[in-house]
Image (cartoon, rainbow, N blue to C red; front, side, top):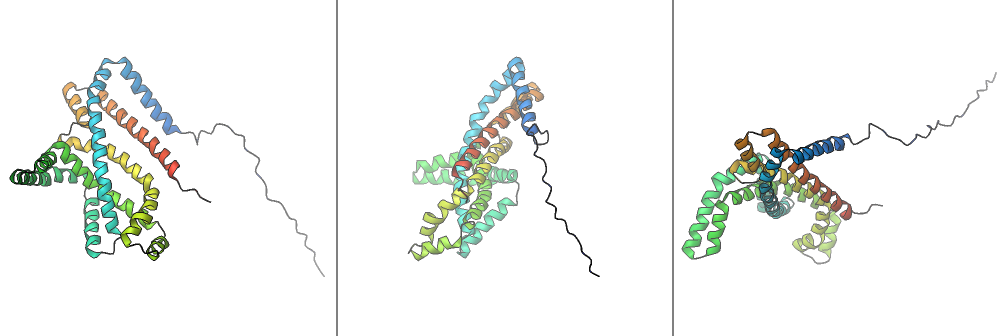
Length: 283
C-alpha cells in the first residue's frame, strides 16, 4: 500500500523592517565621555585662575614637544627604511645586521633605549666628534658633537633609534605585501634589484603602509613624554615643574592630558583623511 507524503514548502521568514531610530548600543559613548571631559576642562580653564596660569605655563612645552616629534620621526623614517630593506635583502650581512638591530631594540623598553643613548652612547660619541672637529679644523663636526651631547640631541637620537626598529617592520610588511610578480616583471625589463625596489616596489609599499606610519607618528608624539626623564623641557617636563612648584597636581595633569589629547585627536583626523585619499580603490 503506497503512502503519500505531502511536502509543504515554506518560504523563509523575512524579518520585518526595523525602524530607523536611536540605538543606545551603537551610540559613540566614548566620544561623549571625551567631549564631556574636554568641555569640563575648558570651562574650568576659562573660569579658574589656577587653570589659566597653568595653561600659560605649559604652553612653553608644546613647541618643544612638536619639534622633538617631527625631528625624531623624520630620522626614524630613514633608519626604518634602511633596516626594512635589510630585512628583505638576500645579502647575508645586511640581513643579519638589520635583524639584530630590530630584534634588540624591539626587545628593550623605549625608556631604557633613551637612557642608554643619553648616558652611555651620546657622551663618548659627542666628545669624539668634538675632538675630531677641533683637531682637523672642521667646525660642522664640532657642532654635531655638541648637538649630540645636548639634552635635545640625546632625546632625538634615542627616540629615532627606538622607533626606527618598529618602522622597519612596517616597511618590511609593506614590501612583502607587493606580489612577487612585480619584482620579476621589473627585472625582466632589465632593471637591477635596487632599481626595481626604488622605482616599482617601494612606491606601492609606502602607499600601503601610510596608515600605520601615521599611527606611529601619533604614538611618538605621546612617547616624547619619556624625554622628561632626561630633562628635555617638553610638555610633560614643564608640567612636572609646575606641579612641583605649586602642588596643584589636579589642575596641572588635567591640563597636560587635555593638551596631549587635543594634539593626538587632531593628528588622528589628519591620518584618517590621508588614508582615505591614498586608499587603493577596490573592485
